[in-house]
Amino acid sequence: MAFNFGAPSGTSGTAAATAAPAGGFGGFGTTSTTAGSAFSFSAPTNTGTTGLFGGTQNKGFGFGTGFGTTTGTSTGLGTGLGTGLGFGGFNTQQQQQTTLGGLFSQPTQAPTQSNQLINTASALSAPTLLGDERDAILAKWNQLQAFWGTGKGYFNNNIPPVEFTQENPFCRFKAVGYSCMPSNKDEDGLVVLVFNKKETEIRSQQQQLVESLHKVLGGNQTLTVNVEGTKTLPDDQTEVVIYVVERSPNGTSRRVPATTLYAHFEQANIKTQLQQLGVTLSMTRTELSPAQIKQLLQNPPAGVDPIIWEQAKVDNPDSEKLIPVPMVGFKELLRRLKVQDQMTKQHQTRLDIISEDISELQKNQTTSVAKIAQYKRKLMDLSHRTLQVLIKQEIQRKSGYAIQADEEQLRVQLDTIQGELNAPTQFKDAESFWSSQI
Image (tube, rainbow, N blue to C red; front, side):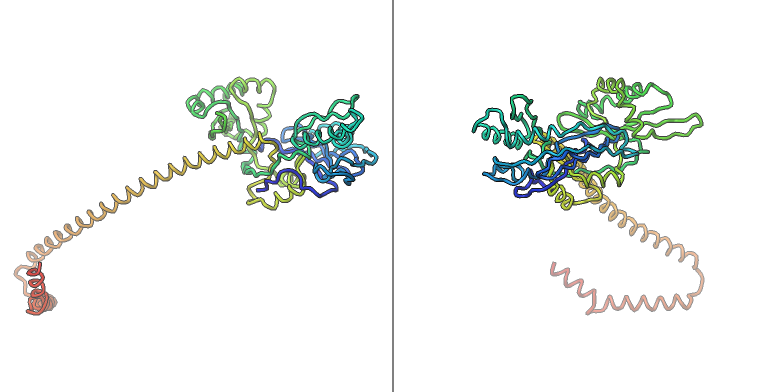
């Protein structure tokens, strides 16, 4: 797991910044922002795409990993931003939009970012707010705010300050973690609803919840709402996975696709009804296509250094099931820690249940072994009784008959065995000796 905060110092050049994937796996739209080189701040070339159900995100302003060559004392911002940076001409270019079909349709035109690039560069390197040596101190303060990922960078009396967010490439409070990729098909129809209620409350009112969701779907008698499972989340929230079965007039049934059900839930009036039920978030639980995975891996999220992103892909413990995701800011890190803690508690609870089951099985095994030994003794007794009955029956059946040759041979063998047992130096004397010793 690559927990390297910020971009490594001492590296300059160009870099790519992409919008971080949306929370969960309901929609993985990404927006590629390729920054210009260090001394030619060209406007980024954006590949505008939407998430699984629309909504393009454009985060960050696409600076490269370095703003140029340091001529004075370096402050350590990014990979070489100092107090005496020399900026060349800002060469702006026309943005390009590429539309991807299928799940990545409905592109949204990204706003022009050239002014933001210029303003950010001015705030971090050469503010002209006061017109004296205090501007250098202000530049360092703006750089610190960029490190923190919060605050406003004042640089000119006539231009509004620059808003520093945690998505900016200089924010140091970043790391890369891994999330499990879902393996469900769209045909499975699984949709996740996050309720702002405890799991115990959800379970106790599950039937009422199903009826309420059925009303949200219009009360159609051909639709049936089913709960796939529930899971406790941090902050007294609960994740409920549902699917809807549609029955046709000819008697057949099918699951409503997850994308169709999610699109219905995202309608404004339906979303309001879900919020009244306590739903804070809804998303599909469907697997990503190879093209989506490839696009996510090839384009680093906004503000994440490409070197860190590449290292995160190399360090992925299971590239078939896990995908790297950025953790920007302490709030996101805290959320993931809470989720991991919750999952650890659930795993421990499951292990405790398994341990109890194993203990119960061991008790049952001990009881079964004792019963088997008891049944063996009973079987031996019954075998002896059966043998005695057969002997008496055979004696009565052959009463009055002459002794046959095989019977005579058997009698001789039995007499021989009896003689060996009664011999002075054999078992009978040994038995008497040990009896006297005891």
